[in-house]
Amino acid sequence: MWRTSTRSGGEGNCVEVAAFADAVGVRDSKDRQGPALSFVPAAWAGFVGATRAGVLDRP
Image 1 (tube, rainbow, N blue to C red):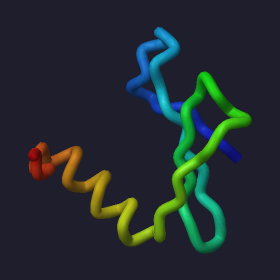
Image 2: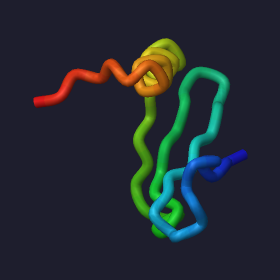
Image 3: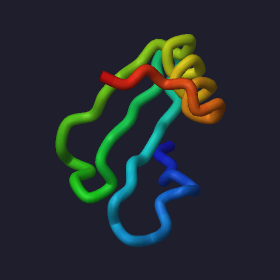
Image 4: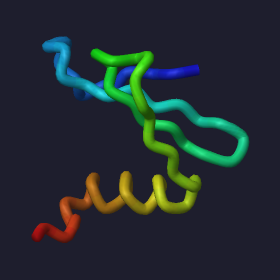
């Protein structure tokens, strides 16, 4: 089941996330029929943890 980000603010600029048996999917909520990204659960957990901690590398 796809869920909309709780931080989307209701302005239409948000992503949806879905947990599957062996992957986490991410898609644009404005284009639900469009492409989606797929991550292994460990990679997604690392991304979420780094985001929450504010330690993402920036180019």
